Image (cartoon, rainbow, N blue to C red; front, side, top):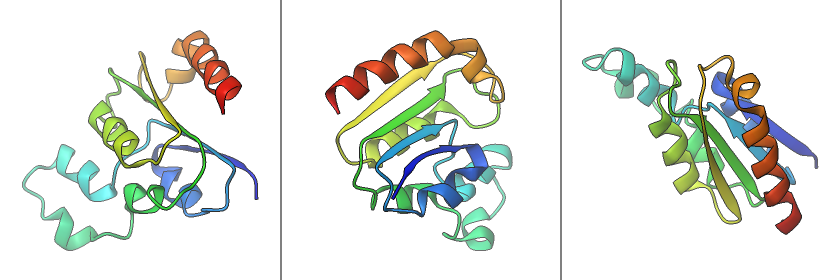
Length: 124
């Protein structure tokens, strides 16, 4: 059992470990199929990708405190993915909305992330 953080496409590999004690998701996609629909709306992603890369499916089995971090200006994975993952996660949980591009969100919003993270840790 260990702490875990997941980011973007690595989300699915990390979140499958349901024995974790604490989860932090940054810029994660809800599902690969939904991410594909964002870029190619007419692409039959559900039929071709299926449900095998579905972060939300695994997240709802995790029984630990979860922090979901997502930028409202993420140009790669829209913030809607983060909001939807937050809804799927079990309590206790927190959603931290930040600013910055997909690959630089922590550097652009480090003080906000650290502040919210510390508040959450004090309670959970």
